[in-house]
Image (cartoon, rainbow, N blue to C red; front, side, top):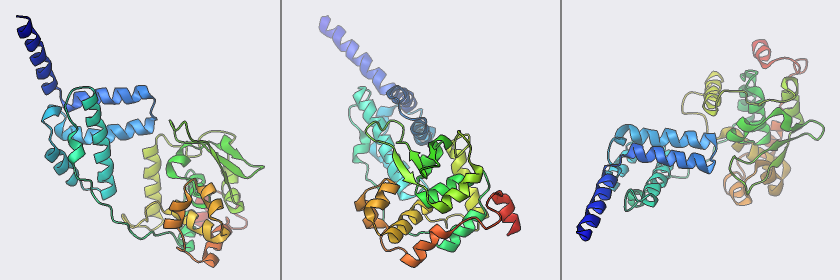
Length: 307
């Protein structure tokens, strides 16, 4: 009798495990991540990517979702290969959580083939293109674009910047580490003279430099700017502002150590991807892009109209 009762309990538990849906596991997974203290942006990214999978398989018992199902879904996404890799990684994290929670026995994503990413030629902006972008940049976006182009600050770092991080006397800006990265320290980025002249008229005592409701709104505004400046959809080089900065800074200053200190990446990455993409005489022109004389205290909107 005791053996039978134990077996009945085991079968009930097994039955409950087998009927637990993907959406139920997703909710528990997101709650655990929130308790771990991940950043809001990371949490939003998880909800977005896993939500897309849940839209198709949310009501399915997670135990019935196979390696083939996941592979077909990922390969069918109409996104870049790197984005498919990102979806695979996040799905693997969720299914790994389901294994730890004893909802499933094994992680089916482990056997899903990882899409290959071809290394493409790195494209940076020409000096005339940088100038065209600046003169089409509206006032609320100008400080962000200037800091990304002339200081190499990443998009997500720019969104976290506050005017109080700018040291006008020292000519630097403090870039804090990403939320949750306790082992990293802030870096102090030198703001060149031309960048200071672009942003000083728009500076505030405090408050976000990229003063937008969310990071998604910020990126959409950047997309609208590129189109207004003449870039058709799909023609904007990936991560163009930061890559342009790193390439020009390295050629202008001739010190890989100084460049990676500014950009916050490794010597290996900088030497592998950003060396000899532009000649020094052209790179030097980036630091000569000042607001026009007589217009340096005017808004960019009026500059565009004057042009």
